[in-house]
Structures are given as structure tokens and as C-alpha cells.
Length: 347
Image 1 (cartoon, rainbow, N blue to C red):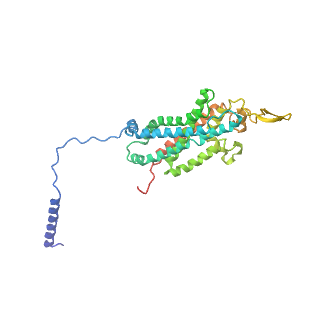
Image 2: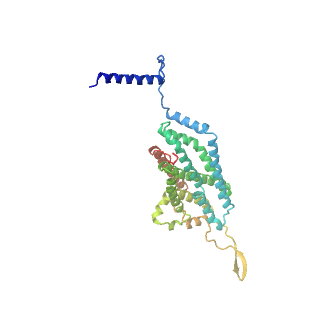
Image 3: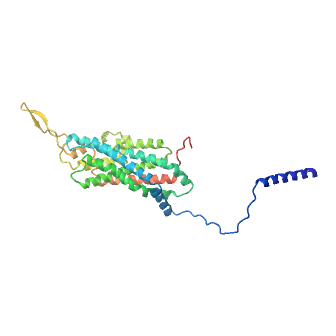
């Protein structure tokens, strides 16, 4: 039980503390008159989110978006011209037949990788702000993907065309103004590049760092290129990897382009060599080992699907199905997996 003296002392201490607080704490102002409460903030609908993201990408990121687009186009043109210079002036002699196969292989399996690596770096840079925006629910994942597709598709088409067209005309792949061959080449190349873009984006959305992305992508690229039919003869591929040629976009594209390139050659030009005839050296044309384009395709076993219905469309259908499947898996991975940026020591 407290004594009266202790009670009085406690009350004095409380009053002293209250007076000190009153001296240091400014007095509250009078409350204002009652008014209307601020309206409730509603979340924007998906179409409005797409429009706002589209405006942000095209207008508020100018001129950085233009610089990025020019960087992609110049990079692809440089790679295309470089390949064109190496294979410049190929003719249709028998001696150049293997070089033409090598040209198509380099276009498909080597030249596209600078743009794929650029895409990987760009996607991982975007994760730094994308993760926070999605965490704060600034916009939805679906709206972001749609806006991104609308903004990037024109630049993507132009940059891929900048890689395809120069090398096509520099290396004489054009066959006497045959626009049908040009259309098939462009169509297959677009599908092929989209296939590897979709594969790279799927791995970017699934894996946390660029290093983890490049590793499986490199394995897929090596398997796809080695089973394409040029580095290793199809009859010499180990059975363990034989099945991969059926899901390889490089194999389907390479086979389609080689058939388009060589099926129309009725006879290769063979160089004349000196031979002894009756003791006199004369120039004559020996029998070519590979006389026609079909002979070359048969020797390389690149026409093994020709027995199926009109192989002209088989390559388009096969690579197109691969593209759709990979883009669907990439969108699914984007919706399911949290797009966290890579942690650095500074963060």
C-alpha cells in the first residue's frame, strides 16, 4: 500500500513531465470544418495500363529508345556485311558448293548470336525496375507483356531484316530475280531468329542470372547446330542425339534453305583440268563427282524428309510450331516466376 506522501510525490513528477512536454510540443491547431473525403483510388483497367506503358516506352523514354533501336540495327547490319564480305562473290561451280552450304550454316548458327546476347542483357537490365513495379502492382503482368510486344515488334522486324537482306544479296543467294526464293529465305530466317529469341526469353524468365541463362542456351545451340546436317553428316550423328534434329529449328531451317538453294541447279559448272590424251596435254571437262544440286543434297543426306507431303511447307510449319510453343512457355514462365533482379554487393 502506498503512503499519502508517495502518492503526492508521484503526482508531482507526472505534472512536471507533462509541463516539460507541453513546452516542447507545439499546440495543435483547431480542426477544420468537415468536408468531402478524397475519392477512392481505383486501379486502371488493363487497356489503360497498356496505353500508359506504350506512351511511357515511346515518348517518355525518348531518345534512349531510339538510340537502343539504332544500336540493334547497326549491330545486325555489321554482322550481315561481315558475313557477306567473307563469302562475297560465290558462284555456282562445283568447287563452291560446299562454301554455299557453309554460308547458310554461318548465317543460321553463328551470325545470330550477337543479337541474342544483346536480348539477354537487355532483359536482365529491365528486371531491376520491373520487379519493383510488379511488386507494387503498378501494372499487371499481362498489360506489360502486351505493351512490350507492341513497342518492340517494329524494331525487332527491322533489326532482323537488317541482318537478313544485306548478306542475301552480297553472296548471290538471289537466283535471277526469283522473288519466290527471296520470300522463302526471308520467311524462314524470321522464324528461325524468333525461335532463338523465344528460347532465350524463356530461360531469362526462368533463371536468375545471365550466366545461368547462357549455359543451357549454349548447350541447346550446340546440339541444334551439330544436328543441322552440315558440321556432322546426318548418318554419323550418335543415336543419343539423333532425336534432337526433329526439334531443332536450325536443322529444319537449314534443310529448307538448302533444298531451295540447290534443287534448282540442273548442272554444276566443273573447272577444266589438263589431262593426257594421246600423249598431248589438253584441257577437258571431266565427269563431275556431284553433277546436280539434287546429287549434292542426296550426298549430304539433306533431302531425307522430301518423301513427306510437299517439304516446302514442312520447314515453315515445324519452326512455326516451335516458335509458338516457346513463346507460350516464356509467357507462362513470366506469369508464374517472380522476376527478381540479380543481387549485387552494392544492393
